[in-house]
Image 1 (cartoon, rainbow, N blue to C red):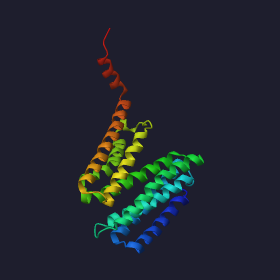
Image 2 (image 1 turned 90 degrees about the vertical axis):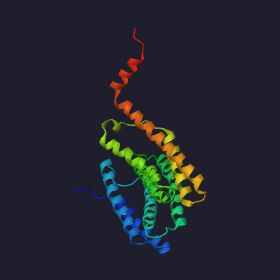
Image 3 (image 1 turned 60 degrees about the vertical axis):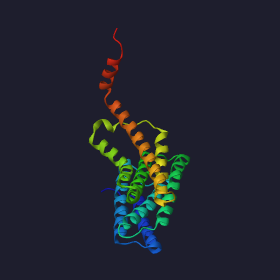
Image 4 (image 1 turned 135 degrees about the vertical axis):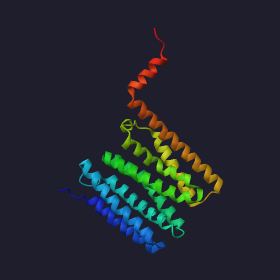
Length: 244
């Protein structure tokens, strides 16, 4: 029998508590509750599986920070889905997102200072970021155009490529530029969500964020293709080199 990890269970109950607090503060309709509950339960299941696969019994210090950020993201998702039926409380959405983004800079520092960095924690952090970008993209798409969904879907399209294509399963080298691009997505989407700029400057900002995202993922795909096709790369280089 697989052992039940307490961390994800605590996170699930905390998620329902935060949803109740949001409902009491600004209201939450049936769609929002369904989305929030689905997020809480699916996140608990995925994290249980992740901990089990990593051989970990519970969260590390930094993972608890990421878990708190994930709970805020779940509340944002519930409010965005609830916005299908009524106008979402923009101030509440932006406030939750800003806190979640600020915490994004905390969990990494906690992991390094406590010496508890792990592959599970890095993946947990990355998937939380990706889902927040997807949720914000869906919200902004209502006003800026449905093409904005491509910003949130890019990470999941990349994952689909990894699952379906053998040469994309290689290990990418670390690159600081990815963090810069990720931060740009967050800034652009939060700015668009808050509506602090006129439409055209907001659109330009979103287009810049999308272009940077295409460049970053495109570079990774090219690197993985070259790394996964050493024979082809050698042949191409051989054709370019002069023969003696």
